[in-house]
Length: 77
Image 1 (cartoon, rainbow, N blue to C red):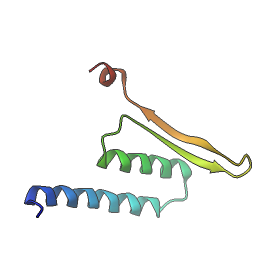
Image 2: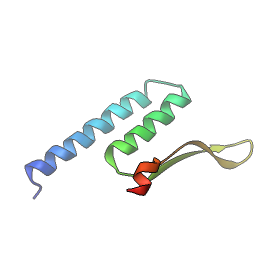
Image 3: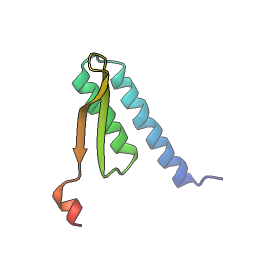
């Protein structure tokens, strides 16, 4: 059985997901969508790096839409 603290944390995650989905479905701007997706991932995980690739149908390959890596301070720490 989940504790009250675990349930509260899960509720916060679901609220962030819902907010992200609301943003995703409210815009057609690809740059904004990419930023929203990366921010949503960062809000529920602790990634060392993120990359988002999209399929380019003309080249029939995946291409980087966005990428984020750790800052130098975090790498040294």
